[in-house]
Image (cartoon, rainbow, N blue to C red; front, side):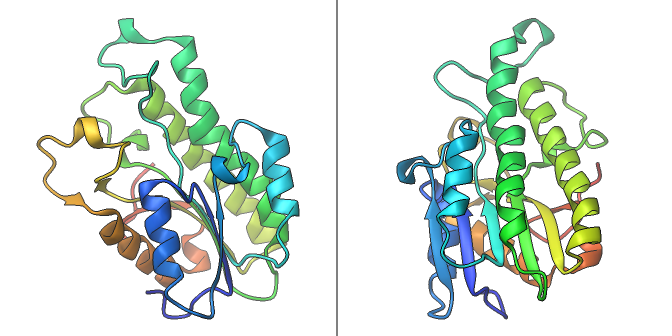
Length: 227
């Protein structure tokens, strides 16, 4: 559990496996207020108006916002194994959820976060978003959208350092978690985390984060992932 619990934590994607686990773990502290947001509450990452409305509906400012969303596969979307499998539709879908959506969340929620104390804005990224770590190829749309997210977080962090230096912006790689996102790709995984295990790791990374770490991407162990 976070040593100094947030007063108000907002979890985006709170009905997903990892989002639920993060919210549930944070809620074990009676002093932390939890706001759970997802499509079921009306927040749609592809709808800027719904994101703005969700932010405006908050009754108290959040000091922790976690974007626990991601899209790797869907009914009409599968990770590409070769260049010939690329499609504009797949890239559009992946970028909408993995990059543009979190950017719009940041745009709406960061101005609400207090300026007089430590606050954290975190979004789930992925190791495969690292360009320097790409040795296998494939998964073009997913890799590119996560790389874009990493750049967005870095850029936001630079601006936040000027306007709200107590705010920390992080990208977090949760490892391979036993959720619907990873289900088709779990074979051969050295370590498969339960959502509760991954949530505990990520909250520990958040708890130890400092402003000097802002704009960077860290894995579940707190090890920085190279761009």
